[in-house]
Image: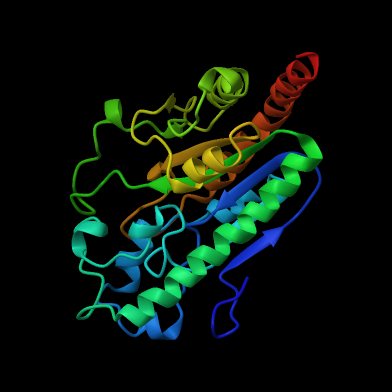
Length: 272
């Protein structure tokens, strides 16, 4: 997919099997007509983006990686909110130097529409080939919003890993997949102790999951996986490479179980 200037806004790698990983907020760049209007600096934008999610997505045979900043167009929001216009759309941040012109926003909306058209084609092919498929929808979130020296957010409401399944139409169909994923991720021998993995505590899933579940209600299971930025300094952007690599390994460890449970769901379909 390309924008009006011919520059790719996302990258797709298609592999074998019914597992997909998406990292739609990994990108940081913006097309020139957008970048020249930013009031928010690079560090401020990076703080709300999802670095290293593209690296984690490499565990899946099929991968969808966003190459642009969510401040150009947010692919995980509903269309009417995918272009931030006022601070309330963007955690109270002043994104633009003045107002964003409507024609610039329209071109961003065109990108959004093209993305979902292409994603629909990909998911349609997966549904036809496999019947059902699972998406690891990878994200990160901040937990030190009171500044670099401020306190961490209360762990009680901010798990290290939040699994959003709130956009699924019927969780019971996918319960085996969800519970196996959470169980295997929680059991992984993570540096410093087992990961705190909980479901629908901080986030319930964004538009990528909602749209997939509405468009492919019998085929798609999107697990919206939000890693708290415990693996990095969210203010400086400096990662702990050991923890970044350990997250890759932890996610990879869940794949056999997820595919096994997915096969059970598919086998149950055949028996009906």
